[in-house]
Every structure is written in structure tokens, then in C-alpha cells.
Length: 391
Image (spheres, helix red, strand yellow):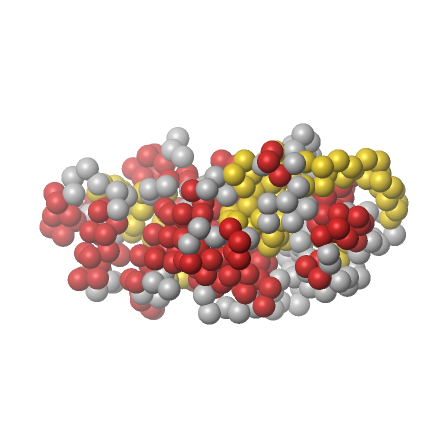
């Protein structure tokens, strides 16, 4: 998805000129557009900006902030990304639910809100890689809609050993796995940018989400990388302050609590997963009492998890959330193993906001893996990440 970059006029002032013009040329050559904006006309009516506009007449526009505000009114917000470091840039991004890129080379000129909430970029190489990643990501690898307003999306094909179409795709998929399962963060930037792009490029799908959460690990903890990602998404989509996992108390606690550790699912055999279904998680998970029935009834919830196998973790979450009166649920995973999905309905009784609830299986049936829409162009996008980041 090609983008329109909304760039504050001081980008040129505080950037190395050669790198700056090289970046602008690359962005335009990649069929993106740029809108330079400032508070008043005089800041964008200089020779420098007029020359750029003359050089790229159909790809660069010069607007005041008020003109830009009017321009954005009826536009598809997934097309835009903000580059800037001032409070005004923060408000522009926040009001329109846009990603904000914050170049750290502005140093002392960066306002506190932008530094705290934006996506910090340390150099032009990193900036261009992020931009490349944003418009590289256009497709979910796997998607499906269940019959109760539940949606399931996976970004990639997790079967790296058997089904990778190239050595490059295989390496990137294994990098993602090492980040989520082993905490290896050498290439965290790739994971973070790709996952973040999937939300930014699909704003219409996520625009009405009220509550964001992640599925707890088997130990009962929360994966820090996934939690921080969820918080960043929640911030730019809902405009609320992100919380860091090293804080003792979280203002927006995770919606799911694993009260008792359980065995890691990938240690279980496939037939065992099918046999126990969601019960392994229902035995050990409840809803966070911070989100009572009043806060959940009629709301829309998005849950992130690492991988989709048979859907047991999602079915646990789905049954708990539906019992609390949640309207729409979106489940998003980084990868899927392309197995049949076990749809399971449970009758829940007792307090679902504590471990003291009971469940009874009403019915379950298999949703054939072939009913999931598969888009193999997503495999090309994962492969492209190898080239974007020069792995």
C-alpha cells in the first residue's frame, strides 16, 4: 500500500541535507507522495520547498496545518503517516489515528509527547526501511470470519520448515519465532515494523476496537514484546497513553489473566490438543476484574497472540468474552500452522472475572482449514522483509 507522508516543514531544517533529499527522492520514486506542512504559508513558501514542488509537481504538496486538517477530513486514514517531532505533529497524528515517526536526530528540538508516544527512528537508513515495510505489507496470509462476529487474521505462514517458498522467507519466519518464543531481540525491529504496518494499513477493520489485549503465556506472564506492541497499537488507534511492562501497575491492564501456569502447548501432541480443546485454558484463565460487565457489554475487542494452531486459546477467549456480552472480536496472530480450527461453544456459570467459574461443553465442530482465505502474496511480503533489512 503506497502512502502519503505528512512531513513537518522543519524536517529539512534539522536533517542532513544530502540524506534528506536522497530520502525524498526514494520515497517519490517508490510511488509515494509527500505533503510538507507548516503553521503558516511563509515556512513552506521558501525557495527550498518551491524547488521540491517544481521538481515533483504531482508528488509533493505544500499545505498549512489548517489546509491539511481540511484535506484529511474525508480521507482514508490508512494512507497517511506523520513524520515530525513537535506537539503539533503529535496532535495531528493523535486526532487522525495515524502512525507518528519521530526522527531522533532532532535531539533537543523533540517535544516530550512525540518522544514518548511516537515511533522513534535513529537514522535515515532505519527511516527508509520503516517506510518500505509500511507499504510492503498489504495482505493477511490467512483470514476467516466465524458466524458470531468473530474474525481471525494471521500475517504469515508459520510452517517454515516445509512450506517456505524461499530461503529468505524461511529465515524471516524463524526470526519471528525466535523473538516470540525465545526472546531473541536482534531483529525485533523487523517484527515490530511488519506487525505495526498490518494494523496501520487496515484501519477500517480495527477502527471501532475499544479494548486491546494479548493472550497470556503458559507461565501466566505476558510476552513483553507482544505487550509493548499491543500498547503502541492501542495508543495510535485509541489515543490513550501506552503503558510499559516494567511498571508495577498498569493503567490499562490486560483483559485476560492466567491465574495458574500450564504446560506449553507446543510440547503437546497434535491429537492431545484436539482432545482437550479449550479446556486447558478455561481451567487456568479468567477475565480481568478491571473490565467488569459494564465495561465489556457491547464493546469490540482485539486479542493478539503469537501463532494459530487449532484455535484452542482463541476459543477460550471467545467464550469468556461472549459470556461478558462483547460484540465483535478480532483475533490476530503473527503466524498460522494451517490446521483445522476447533470451534467450541461452552456454557459458563459463576464469576468469569475470577477462577471460580464453571464450564460445560455444549457443542464443537471442525472448521476446515480450507475455509480460511489464504493469500500467498503475504508470503512474498515476508520474503521482501529479508531484502528491505539487508539480512
